[in-house]
Image 1 (cartoon, rainbow, N blue to C red):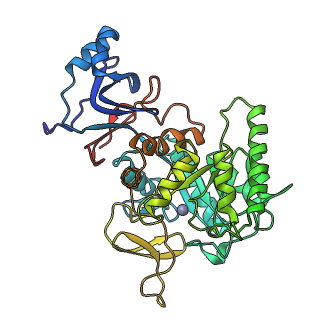
Image 2: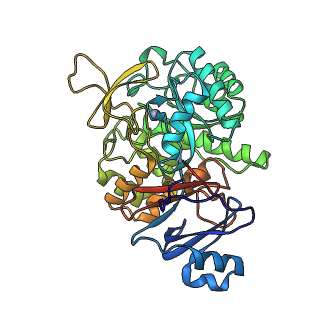
Length: 427
Ligand SMILES: [Zn+2]
């Protein structure tokens, strides 16, 4: 083994291991801080100067920890709600768990220690087959579940979704998908105006009943249509949570602004409804804040308007994340990546068609968000604590005592140095 400073030996059971740096907790940044890990769980977090008051084993571990390089940041492992792949593999096209793991590890090595695997609109057989394969990964603890982006989406606002496979809301397909995913389908993007989605006995109702959270997106809805779906789902989720003892789940908007009718003052569309719903606590809005999908000022304004607690930063990454420019697939659609920007390949448009997913890792999105003027603590919170809460996962998403020791160490510019998942180094 090399003696590079990145190497973290696996400690003996019960042995505390401390890391030092600027620690980003859900609420603030501790400038000269430490995180102490025991048996894969966070045991202690605080200022180095306070460690002497902790129990002797913690105090000794902090005293023993190497002094970090200036600027070193310790972040919680990041949580991505919307991710189609990376490392050359897309979940919508992967045919084995081994292949899908290439994408999972591509993101994990860059600090995303919890993620949903996102599918795209495809024919029924493909969706059921992929869901069954990804359920194996969820059962193995490698992903937190599955996000189905489609197929009950707007033709007008389909973005890179396959037009041939868009269908009206179909309760039978929801049930089959839930069954194929063996309970690991977590979210599904739906458009409220598509027939068969909203209202009694629609797809949204079937999703909530199955414990799957509808995510509003790829929609040409009016404000009123979006408001009605949010009201229906919010009430449904509250009723569903009251029945069981599982943590309450939260509705999301799939990449707010992208794949939606734009906000116009005489035709405000779904965005106005989403912002209002987020501000009152009924919705969390995803932002693909990668510097490509949204202007920095849009990101900054939304975080200031609804608060970091109502924003989930996502990558919407596709197979090209972490890879060179070139030709890729996103489900049934051909995609060309040029200068890191993925667009639908279109022989009639030399510049390419609609943006077709992202190529960033979530830590890059955090960096872009900070560069847009969002405070570091808020950007990190929206990429860890908030999405973990959305998924109802109380054990990840924060450098908080008792949570899984998922730790991302970066330099002062958020470039990844090492990643721990449950206290173990991610190779
Ligand atoms: Zn997507």
